[in-house]
Length: 347
Image (cartoon, rainbow, N blue to C red):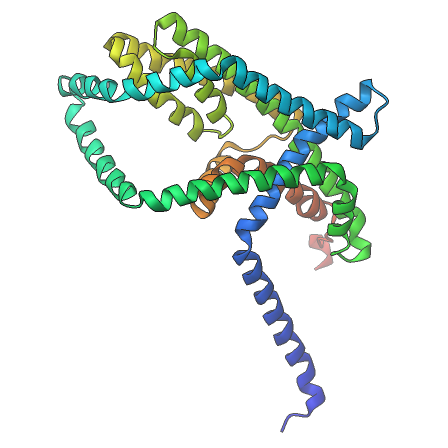
């Protein structure tokens, strides 16, 4: 019979394993909340970057600078809605009314093209999926309401994080052993800097995509060019998938003008994305972090599949942060570890 002293190490390992499993299960159950927390961190990073500009040019302390930034952003949103709200509402309504006719004309054009049968089969599959979505319209409406509440929570949480970043950073670091806090703190700082640089570059890219798309659609004579350009700019925050989604309504409306304009609109979006991919994105990656395209692609689909729309929106900045943390905490540690490799003479 085993002595109790010999069983203690085994029992300890079992208890540790169970504790780790329970903690992992808890994290998975709270994954949606953790994603909202990360969204608040992204908002805080934007606010802190703007606060840096205020404190650099004024003697205001951080609290007053944050209040100025929040008030200015709120005033800008109200001003934009006041100046362009009516025009945007008219263009969105025009877009809503024009899309059914655009879809009909697009279908008529497809019927006479060689690729018509293939596209028709794909459209039938899309209609089947859409009917399934329509059957859950009530659940989607409730989800949209919850999305608004989550957005409000993220914004308010971001303001709190931006007001006292050292408090929350120190609280997280206290969860780790004291000898590791310096290394982990440096990794947090590096990932936060990379996130701030990525967000700044992405905002610049979104602005340029919106301007180029708007000018191009206006020159082509596509209806509702301003509204389509705004959609293209906003959806550009989601790499790869966003530009494709933004091109769909623009191409449909362009086909209402003529098939030639529709094809030209497709070419316009391809050119704009080439400019972004080959000119703007290298500048963003040079300032922030050079993400492998395949890693970003699989991250978008993986996080989006797990967490839905919110995960899709936050997949790119989350990938930036995790990528930098892994490089700082794991890859650098592995490279710094000296491994003694015996020479052939040592046998």
